[in-house]
Image (cartoon, rainbow, N blue to C red; front, top):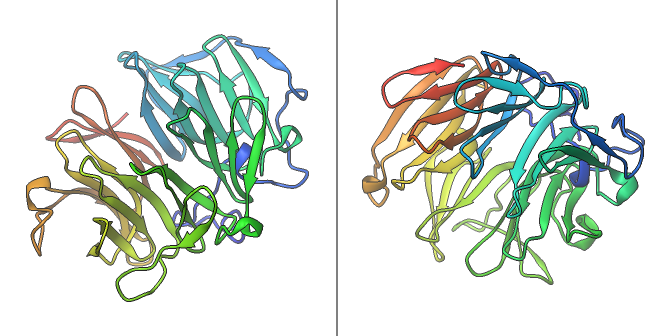
Length: 331
């Protein structure tokens, strides 16, 4: 994990657990190998997490799921429930709902937890994961589950894991983001260089000047098929031919809402100030697109997601915030 795990600086990405990083010897699972633990008593509160929140999603039933350092929280529209309070004391970093409705929770040092709504199953390096710190979780078009870790990337087909590391051509084992584009190629954002995998070979991505993209923390594909990369080199868009830079500020996360607007969490002044910004979809082709600053401050800002009611949820170093189009409120 290089110096990320040692530094308290918000800028540093502390990767989660499981299939994506192999923390040698660090399997703080609390569960025997291959064991399934039934759901126990949960803690219901009126407020969300009070600690660093790295990932947020909304499931098919409309529930909001939050991966935070003080647990996995579910918000049903009325109250928050800490789902993992009696299951694991791990700090959680990533969450995914797969096509079957199962939920995957990536942690720091304790691998990944599979939750079917009733019970949990824990996977760590003992089951074949690349590592126990999982920064991101992604499901591809075939239904394989990918995990980005500090020890490489892992692909799980439901039976076994296939790991990808620098030995396979990955530029760096610290993987922050994984997506599959419309052509079937996989894009990997790492703390080294960003790269593309065509199923056989990893190719380092370079911009128009031939320079590689470094410290990429977030990659998405928008509705038009453009690829967006956010990281230490700023915010970039790739239209299949040309890369266009939108900001030089370090970008943590990139998100596209239903209207096609691009949202980013970014930092400046050496991480002293973090900003949530919205790039207006209608102006993205302009030389100077319209950018609206929604919120800023000293707290780190991370994952961004739009809920079904149109509100924007933001993970931060002190919990969760929601923007209703007018005001930002901490939950």
